[in-house]
Image (cartoon, rainbow, N blue to C red; front, side, top):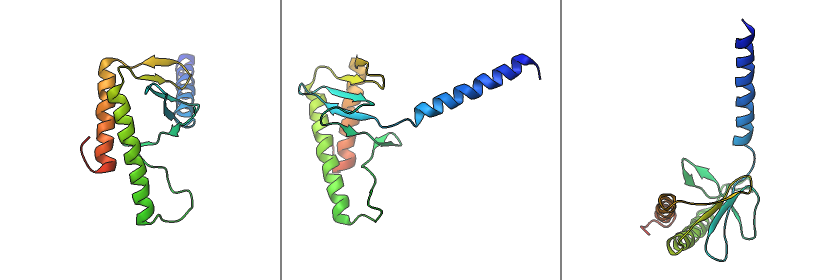
Length: 134
């Protein structure tokens, strides 16, 4: 194997390790400020909630008590998620702009298309959690 191939393999392995570290490196938080603007970041703000995603959809937090959840507990989780989804949809729908904060603390305003996608996603969350459309 020549030196260039070895360096290429080593560089590829180092990059794979670096990116896999970023992929599993902590929580993403979401919060809405007093103007109704949604923010996302790796550091929580007042009222922030951890965003958990599975197959592109938010999921309720796992049971941390080590026991199966009862139907009542699951219904309460769904109810809370439904309420949050309705609030998020209302805030997105009534806001002219949505600002997100990335993992490095940099804020960015979503484009009109991204805003519409966020509104559609929030409406889909209502359907998922509340069992109804918008």
